[in-house]
Structure formats: C-alpha cells, structure tokens
Length: 308
Image 1 (tube, rainbow, N blue to C red):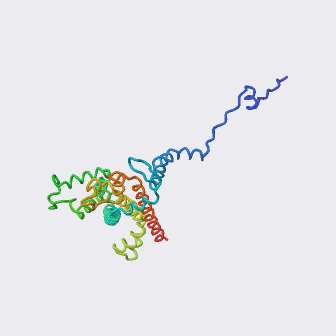
Image 2 (image 1 turned 135 degrees about the vertical axis):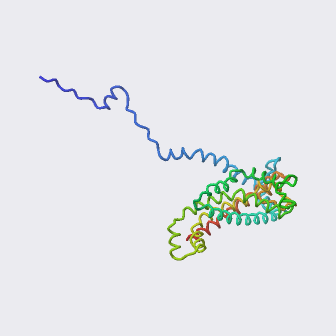
Image 3 (image 1 turned 180 degrees about the vertical axis):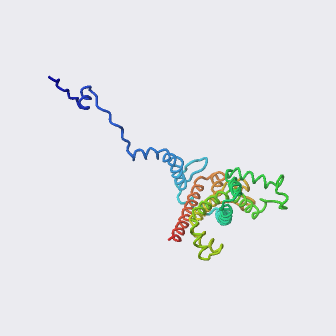
C-alpha cells in the first residue's frame, strides 16, 4: 500500500506557524522621492534668497541704520529720499548709457566671432580657445588685471600715446567697456555659436537654390533663426550691465568727479559708503529690482510677439 502523500503548507501558513510575517518590499512614493531630491536646493534658495529678500523688504520701509538698527517704520520716506538724492538721476543716466553701449558692442562682436569660428577649419579650435580663455577669469580678477594695465606708473599700454585711461569721464567709461568686452565676448560668442549650429544646412541650401546671395542668406535666414539666442544674450547683457558694480568699484571708485557711479554703486554708498543708511539702500534696491523686472518683461514680450 503506497504512503499517503503529504501536502506542503502554504507560505503564509508556514510564516504564521513560525510567528513571523513575510517582509514586503518597501515602496517609495514618486512624490516623496521628488521632494527628497528638491529639498537641498529649496533649503538653499530659502536661506540665501527668500529670507534676505524679505529682510530687504522690511528694511525698505523702516528707519534702519547700519549701526543703530531698526528705529521704526517710515514708509514711504526711504523711497522718496532715495530718489531725491543728488546722485540718483546721474547714476540712472550713466547706468543706462553704459548698458546700451555694452549691449550693442557685445552682441555685434559675439555674433561676428561666432560667424568666424562656425566653420570647421584647422585654426578654429585655437580661435575658440583664445576667445573663451578670458571667461575663465572672475570679474574682480579681470578688473584688477586691467587696473594694472591702465596704471600710469607702469602701464604696458604707454605706446598707444594715451596719457590717462581713467582720468576723464569718457576715458573711464570706454576703458571699462573694453574690460567687459574682453571678459564676456567669448561667453556670448558661445551662446550664439550654439544657435548657429542648430540651424539646419538644408535651410541654407534651399536659400542658395532660390538665388539668395551671402548677405540675403544672413539677413533673411541666419538672423531670424538666431533670434532666440540673440534674445537670451540681450537679456543677460542688459541685466548684468544694469547691475554693474565690481568693475567700476575697482577701476574708478565712481570717479572722476562721480561720473561713473552706477545705480548699484549708489546703493553701496548709501549703505556702507558714509551714509550708513540701510533703509534707503534697501529701498533703492527694490526700485532696481522693479526696473529689471519691467525691462525683462518687455524683452520677453517683444520676443514672443516677433516669434508669433
């Protein structure tokens, strides 16, 4: 007689007999994982951007001295007194002039450099490296380098026959523009070059088959397709120029005769340059922020309108 077969107990029964429950694999929520990845950046932004911004807003409506601290609310006196400062409108005018000059020169030069290095030749690698090397320097380091070049005691540029590179308002402006162009032309060239390489060769071929010349191809094909890249360069250049501080603080200290005081340097002077008034400086900072938002909004609207 054959033995009676023994049926194996189900896994759950075995686990219950041993007093244990089977382990289930941990399931991570996609939302929880996303929050975990975003948390360090969110904390960084909160501590170093949101909290200082709220503090600046609080200062802008308070009588807040550098050493005396908060002496109470005084809104909107800080805003009106900041605009009534004798250096406010000269600083605004100089900042706008510097922004226009720098933006026009940088955009034109970066476009020309990008067109030069667009084609693949044996010298393009060397040219691209040479144009991009100045961008490796920090702006403060580049400003100190040019300050040594412009120094009348031991300037290596004496052969140009220029007595002073920083002695007059016009010379100080153009000397600073030369520094900025040397420092940032390669960076903007790279942005434009990316846009050029994104244009399909079929578009150029179709234009040539239609009888378009080199200038017509550049005007009616290259420039319209480069509009997003040029718009990005314009926004970055305008924003950086309106916030200019390092180069003028190192090269000119706002001179000669306060002719090169930018709006950000005026903020610094109100806060730490003798006035020691953090409230007025914060109010002027808020005005600069509003101006930047308006300018960038107009540029984005203009770009979208043209694309439409």
